Amino acid sequence: MTDEAAETRAYAQGEAEAGAGAAAGPVALGIVRTPTGHAGVDAHLARLADADHLAADGHVAVYEDVHTGLREALTALDAPPVPGPYENRS
Image 1: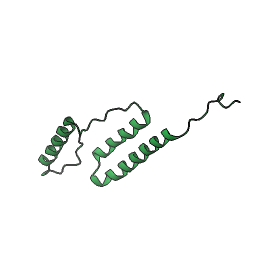
Image 2: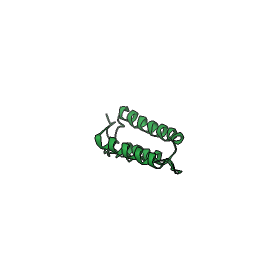
Image 3: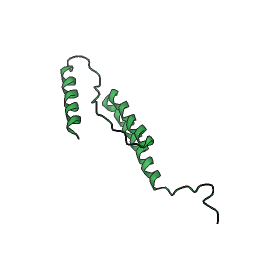
Image 4: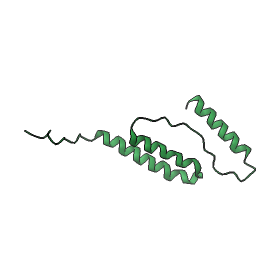
C-alpha cells in the first residue's frame, strides 16, 4: 500500500468514526486506481468503485465479479492466437 493510500484510508476511517454517532452510511476509501492500459482489466478494476457505496455484506458480490473477470482476462492471455484469414494457407 502506498503512503498516499494509507493516508487516504486513515482519513476515511477518521471521518467514519467522527460520524459514527449519526446514521452514517458506507464511506468510500478514496483509493486511486491507476489505469493499466488494458481496457478489459481497467473496466473490471473500475467496477471495484461499486463497492465503495455498499455495506460490507454487499462487497462480496462485487469482489467475486471482479475476480472472475480478471481471471478470464488472464486466461485469455494463455489462449493460442487465432490465425488470420491468410495465415492458414499451405
